Amino acid sequence: MQTNNAFPQAARRRTVFFLLACLGVMVFAAVVYRVENPSIVQHEERREMPGGMGQMGGDMSGISSMMQKLQANPEDVEAMRGLGMAFMEMQAWDKSMSFWDMVLEKHPDDVMALNQKGFCLFELKKYAEAAELFERMLTIETGNFHAHYNLGVIYKHYLAQPDKAAAHFQAVVDAAPDDPELVENARRELSGK
Image 1 (cartoon, rainbow, N blue to C red):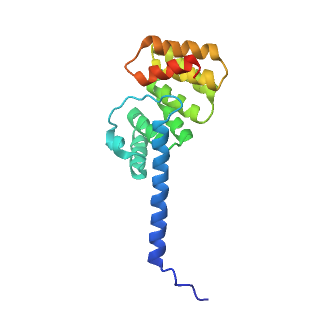
Image 2: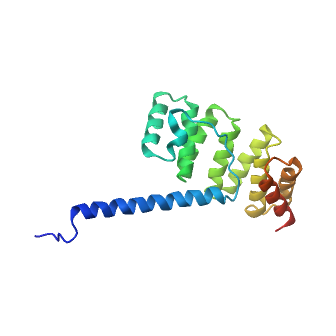
Image 3: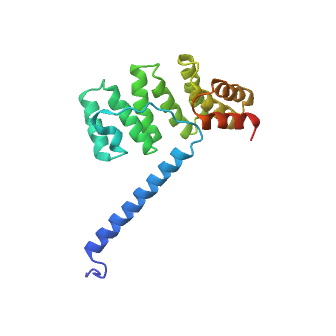
């Protein structure tokens, strides 16, 4: 049996690489869109992760090295955080949540881990569970305006509890954080627009 050489092996390889590059650009554009147009706010502490995780951006070799680091030291909370953030960037919500759960096992009151896990639950359309985590954040930091805003969005748009939502949006407006866009969004939600 003779194969068709009209499309040489080198051309096939270039085509495959081109298609993979296009897929990468589409995934990147989707992540950028979600970051610029979130339905709830995702607030995380910006810190440099050990091992260059901050610049990794979903690089599989970086994830592998962080996994190895975590295997070598199962108590490495920063590796857990780095992996949680990396999988969130890739929109692998379930995988990301497993690392936030690891952090919360070690530090049950870790506000960042609660927020990030709540965001993952929201993306998985588990709104009541996400609300529980944001409520738990408020028992730790009563003035956390990101948690208030997120709860307002969830209660108003996903759990049909407008009175609870209004109280949380009002808390954001009253706190007047140094985030004019967030305050304006809370005002807009309160006015029903």
